[in-house]
Structure formats: C-alpha cells, structure tokens
Image 1 (spheres, rainbow, N blue to C red):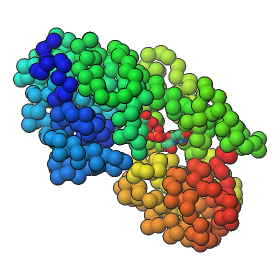
Image 2: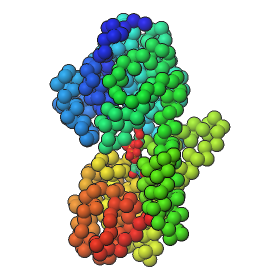
Image 3: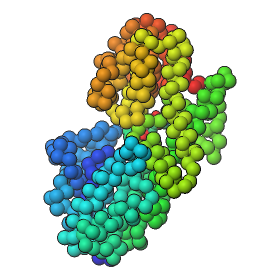
Image 4: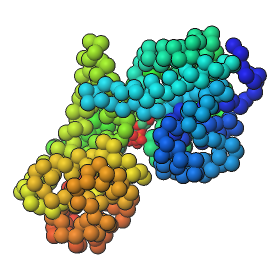
Length: 440
Ligand code: UDX
C-alpha cells in the first residue's frame, strides 16, 4: 500500500462526492477533525450556493461547523475540475432514489463512480473510494467496482481501495449523530481499504465494526427495517389498545421499561415519513422477492404504515358524520418537527385522502409550506395556525411541532373545536376542545 503521506499522518485529503444532506454534514464533521476536505457537487445551482457560503439545508449546529470548516480550508468544487486526482479518500454521498417498481435508481452512483474512475486514472498514489449512499448489498462490489476499474484502467485492491460506510444520521440531530455515533460500520474490500477509513474516523468516539462490503451495506437496511417495523408494531399495539378502551400510553411506557426493549421509538401515531424508512423497506422488500425470500414482516411494516392515515380519516369521518364539504384544518406537513422536508409526509397523505373524500382542507406548517406548495400546488395553505383553524369544523395534527402544543385561544375560532391528533401533539387539558387521539 502506498500512501501519499505517511500512514501515521492523521489527516487525509478527502473528497466528499455530493453536496446533499449527508455529504454536507459528513464534510463539515470530517473537516472539524482536521482533514482537508473538498465537496464535489455536479449541480451548478447548488454548487454556486455553496460557493457563496449558503447552505441548502438547515440542520442544528451545521452552520457553525460549516463556517469553521470553510475558514479552515474546506472547499467546494465541480468534479470535472480534477479534484479527485489529489484525494486519498473519496466518500460518495449521492442520492439513491426509488423507482416506481421499488427498485433503486443508481444513476447518480454510476455517474459519480465514472468521474472518480477518471480521476484515479491520473492519480499516482493509493486512494480509497467509499460508498456512504444507501445501496443494496452487492452494489459496491458489483456495480461501483467495475465502473471504477473501467474508467481508471486500474484494479480495485492493489491499485485503489473500496469501502462501504453506511450512514445513520437522523434529520434534526445529524451533526450530533455524526460527531457522537452509536457505532461506525466500515465495510472494506480488504484491510488496506478499511484502514484508511479508520484513519478518517479516528477522532470519532464509539465502537468500530469492520466487515466485508455487502455486510456493511446490509447493516443500514437491517437497522432501518428494525426501526420502521418497531414503529408499525407500536402502532398496531396502540390501535389494539384504543379499540379495547385501554390506556395505550401506559401500555407502551411499561413495555419500554423492559431493558430488552427500551423506551425509544415507541411513539404511536400516524406512521413514519421521511426519506429513509419507506424507501429502504421497499427496496429491501423488492430485493427479498427477487431472491426468493418472502418478506412478510417488511410488507406488514409498510401496510400498517399506510393504514394509519386511513384510520385517521375514518375517525374524522365518523366524528363529523362525513367529511364531504367540511372545512378541515390540517396542522403539520413536515415529516417530523424541526425540518421543512415533506418526503413521505403523513400530512400530505392525509390531505389527499380528505380531499378525495370531498373535504375542504386548509393546511399550515411552521416551516414546510413552501416545500409542500411546490409538491402540492392545489392544496390551500394558511399563513398561520390561527387562520388555518378559523371556521374549521375539525382540526388534524399530523406533525408534533412544539408551536402547536402552545395553541390556546386559536381553537376558539373553529366552527367546531374537534381535534383529531395523529401525533400526540397536544395536551388537551384546559383547552376546551373535543380531543380525539388517533390510537390512544
Ligand atoms: C431515519 C433514521 O432514524 C436514521 O438512522 C436513518 O439514517 C434515516 O432515517 P429520519 O428519517 O431523519 O431518520 O427521522 P426519524 O427521527 O427516525 O423519524 C422518521 C419517521 O418516523 C418520522 O416521520 C417520525 O415521526 C416517525 N416516528 C419515529 C414515529 O412515528 N414514531 C417513533 O417512535 C419514532
């Protein structure tokens, strides 16, 4: 193995491929540990924003970490500028969206691999290509490796290293999750590849697990499948409690006190949204089916999740004696509080179910109205919670923003103060409202 610097030199020249959510957090985090980081971004608009010092995402702590990194020499560049030649480690953080049929679209991964391969052709030292994007087992070896070898004319192993380093960041706590990981998983083609990643992450706390490429790729899917299925099981238990007139919250609290189970991720409600859980469970389901393994739990996880918004609309329909023609205030469009991300938003699913049933929906979210408007331009949006609630015959809470828990007199402006809460977003005591919890 030939390092461009001595292996004892702690700092590496790192290219982060993709200036999206994972890429920017990873770049700022690694730069804060002293590595020389360049973010490679192909999309001109985003590149210009980043060059001008503007971050396209909002994440607690990121702006401060980013400014410090820029002061310390972090750069942003287009891949065609030739930055890959100098890098000792390239970490690929591009998107892997899902196609209609549930399979993964690897176009960005393939494009990045081709660009990196060209860079490797001209470079002299040993460098490692690490895939951080979520990819199904076998992708780094079977898809990325041949593209790199073809484009570079060099061989993975002796000439350059290959690794899979899955990401476990959650939105809203991404910087903390990066700096204080539960574990660092490094899938290496060989020992030399893994060692470069161990150096890159040397200053992070927490246990390291070194695996082969496919195992590391699978760990990400297995983790997200566990978390998503836990939410669906929580929701099924909660539905069952409510149907029997039992205290759902006490049941879940007691269940969480068992230290084999633990208290996290036991929040019942309208189901999971976001960019990872549904996409990853669907991709794993498609993989299972394609290799002859019946994905019963994975399918049920998605089915329960898709049922929760239907249950909510059913409850509303029953309380109102039909939703047709009724004005319904929808509070919450972001897939969770603290973000303007509306991917797989339960709020938007509820809006579309209600509108299909003939309801007049008016929606509000403290952050996500612009992104929701771009995705659903026909939906009616209010500029604040009071206007959203005014004249409504019912209100639905689809995201547990702290702002909503502080609403008081605003409910007085409703035609009927009926609140169907899909997220435990309110403590109804003393509000003078007719409160209905989705599954508690
Ligand atoms: C998730 C994983 O947590 C992260 O490790 C992975 O890398 C990406 O996917 P994220 O999508 O940012 O992160 O959010 P998370 O906080 O996990 O919540 C996802 C969804 O599940 C949200 O819609 C949330 O409201 C819902 N959820 C979460 C529940 O309904 N109940 C819970 O108990 C927990």
